[in-house]
Length: 172
Image (cartoon, rainbow, N blue to C red; front, side):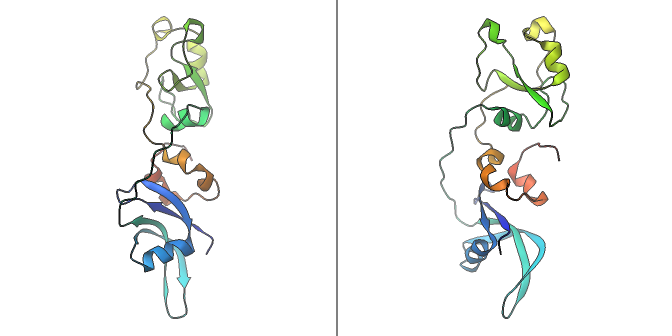
């Protein structure tokens, strides 16, 4: 009964991770419905049924969005753990200032990107034009990063079937 269950809002946006017992109560009260089941079974006095892994709340829960600050992990998550110069997916990334610090480049969402070590070394402290490099996509502040918002829970337990709902490109 201690396993985690991913809770989605009515619009399928991740809200929280709750314990199995809480998920079962929400389902019993018709406040949530099962989206995906686990391989485990739940045994009660008179029934046996599949254990939920992902549930969806049947009504919309208005929740304020956190004000995300740029950090290594948030930049990597925003960029899907992908080098923004060559497209290589990796866990071994560095942060790069698109506009170098030496000419006033800031540490903000619009100026920081994920870069593999090779691309970061190649670019150095040059501008994109000087380095003759292009970005795959223009960096901007994300509206929502569920993987980071739920990180205090997802470190405890992360399931394969949650990935599509957490919508991040982290390599396995």
